[in-house]
Length: 219
Image (tube, rainbow, N blue to C red):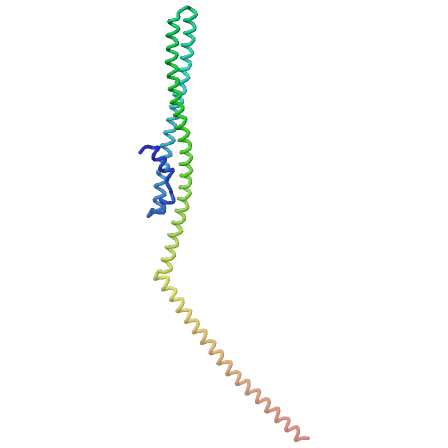
């Protein structure tokens, strides 16, 4: 597969669809990013070569144009000296060189089109790569959070924690029973004290009644 076909495939790929189908999204996004990074390096390297080739062709075109002007000057010189044959030969050289200039400029135009296309696709690939890296961070965070939740759930349902909770409930019940017994004893003591208080009160009333009777007798 050529680099241009692979570049096009990556740019047109649907990352969300790939991740949805993947059994291991984290591994898949790493592979996608690696493929994008490698392709981006290759494309940029290829672009640098195209730019270098364009510079070489541009210099070649300038040299050919100078040569054409030089042959035109030679043709003028030949005519000024009455050498029409030499003038025609010089003009023929100029024509051949101009043909080469046309071909070179067409090649330059093609390179410009290629560079424009590469520039656009590099921008698209870089944007795709940035998106993939952002998704990678999100996936890693989600994976870490999910693993933490799984760990917590396993701990919550583990035998040791269940056993510890059972013990807590047992001791809570024991404490409730002990508090209930203490309350019962306190209530009993209060009831007994109330009876003694009532007896003392009754005795006081009886004494006061007796005192009143004695007082009336004395009158």
